[in-house]
Image (tube, rainbow, N blue to C red; front, side, top):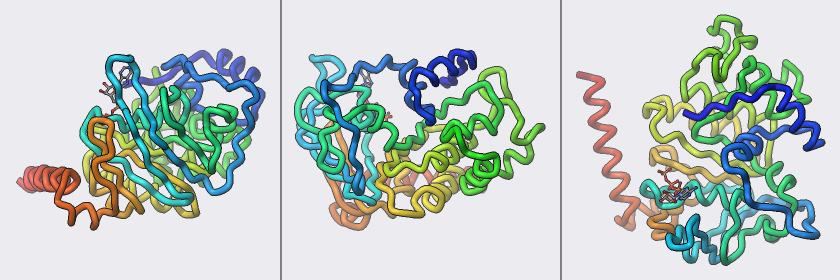
Length: 304
Ligand code: ATP
């Protein structure tokens, strides 16, 4: 489990260099982790957001030239809609996010937001528009209040507490030894994967981005906790028109999506709503049946 703990003075330095009143946890985390190769193109302009519609057009990408991940990937996320990406492990779901956030650039094709090629916009403005709830939420070695406030540094204590209430983690915090002053992160109190993801939801709520990217944890949560978390996200983060992309492992969480994209080996093999895909009786249908029988087994074990 990756937890970021950097001396706070290092944080301070980065913060001043960025000269922005919004320290984006995800950027910092990924900068350290991936040493981001993407750079602003000469003459890059700030992203001009209208509704936040996202388009991948004939995108090709490879981490290593001899192993292409995408050859010709196209899909659209209409403004304000909720799109889920599902598919077998390794099919490229997380890579979609890495391209959208410009940790990497496509080798061919184009990714655009509201008609603007993201290759030509200032990366900082792009990332400011996108809120991320990652699979494994990085926590700083700081107290809960500070960790949530990283979503928006000028948020008041009341706003932080309101966000944790909406993310349904306030009661957990109330039970911690020092409440909001409890130290977490490396050397701090260990909290569960689900609680960390709720803190990430609270952070993103403070950030209030027009585009949301949610990467469902693969194994950290049991089915029930996961379902509760998704309910919170639906009410807390999708309470207004926000374009969102969900990477989902538990298919139960995608039933309500406006569009489900099924990826296999880097290609879109099916797309539609849950009902449409069930009627197709293809890959989605068989993944669904497989999960339903696994979950049935889990429930039987719990009853036993
Ligand atoms: P999962 O459901 O298991 O999280 P995924 O669908 O999100 O998988 P990706 O993480 O997008 O899959 O990875 C797609 C492919 O690219 C995988 O085969 C993976 O091994 C490979 N890959 C991912 N990151 C890198 C990297 N930094 N360098 C090289 N190969 C990578």
